[in-house]
Length: 461
Image (cartoon, rainbow, N blue to C red):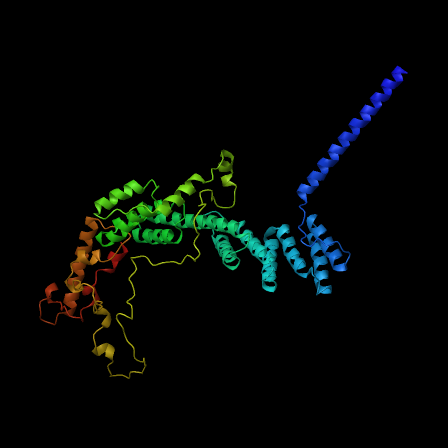
């Protein structure tokens, strides 16, 4: 009896272990299924057996298990059959969600179109903000690196900005705001790379144009202080006429980025320029301190996976401050001549007519001097400059901002070429029997273009 009892106890113990293992295995499988098939949120939990609810529940179950095409057919059946159902808006949103979960280029494009339709038909529903947030996420997840095509980043910036403006009280606004900071960090990094290239090349007007537009549009950029430093250096290389712009760039480093590593050097530059040193802005100091304390630190594994990641590196993006809510517009470099403002110097205001000139008749082009050779009238209150006809070649070259600083050898070569051109023009204009000399060339408005303008090759050097 004792042996029988021990054998019975052993069998019962083995049965208990087998059942426990089966239970653990079943729970593990259930957990894995639940992780793979994410439950679809059904906001309408009323327990009824109405036909429209049956169709909606069946569609949500298909979405959870990856049967997206079957789910969309069921949802379209609901929409076309029960046009007054309370599930009508939910079914429209569920179709968009099915495309969003399916993914892929085609699926995300269809999802965006469905979300836009949902916002158009149901703009007052709380789910409209959710639809706009999904559109922002669609383009945000498709962003490329900063040195590649910024099309998706620009679209993501527009969609996130629209979410903040159209639905300011939505629960998605904080996440969209931070997402917008990340997007603008990537866009600003792309502009910074272009500005660095021009600065290293010596194309100072082009570098100044890019960098100034960058710091004005994206002041929260993590390298905005470095961009201002290069901006001030670019203006300093362009001569004394841009001394004020260079000093302003250094002053912005001290005022708006007091914790920057360039702040002390910027103060020294301002002292060299004999410009006042501004006081640091307390709000800018607090914002910069918060960003430095809460900046995301990448692990060694994340740094190693950077080459395989499609999206840009935004771990240095700002965590505080209002992102830019306007679109970045291109600007004109200072080396490009400025068009005269017609409000200050009004030009021709009459009617333009055209007539045919017969043989033997002369037109105003033959009788009157060329207006393009006349210097433009000085604006009211502006200092009078030296007439262009009385300028030396060096003074003419100094009036034109150039991407390349001319050496002394190049200047002498251009002066020699300019004098030779003057002699040729004087010979052409001198009457027969008159000795040709550069001094015989008239200094009126009817002078040839070569006598009043520097050689065309000088502006291209």
